[in-house]
Length: 258
Image (cartoon, rainbow, N blue to C red):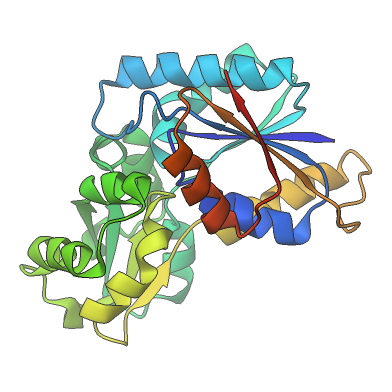
């Protein structure tokens, strides 16, 4: 079974890492690193990049594609599903539903890219859950740049997070939602500067659970463990390749520039 993933960069590797521990298959991870980051670009450009990525993965005979990018999911997944209605697409959205299940009347801070924060998909989700009065949203676009760089020192990241969070009374919050697949790479940094009473949530567990469920609909055995990893890059970058391998904790990666 060929399983496709795509993101603008290494962020989706946080989901792939979890999938590799639980699912067998030939994984094709497309990183559009030439056009990264998506979160600060115009919506039409993100749609263009997303459709191109899907076409590339379809040429690799992927029957299931994980849009491992919150920004691309927010902007493009509806139209992608309409055009390719014979393919299963799994999107990623901020784990607001999970936050609602366990929040205790305190506030929820949703962090994401600017496009996701301003997008209708997230706003509609919050409205549907009837928790709008409890939710605040914060764009942390620079974290995507730090993740793609892979070599930014901890103090620089901590200073950035502190500067963005300093106006929030964190004692009033029960959850911070990491609403971009790049953000889980900085859990240690968040934990350094926020109260221990706050719970960090990301979408990886829900996405992988959904992926396993969809694979079972093919009567596919997800338990036999011998996955193969193919990294497709829109631009060759040795630092990116090494960063990707470190995140997924696997050096056995076939690399192809598309």
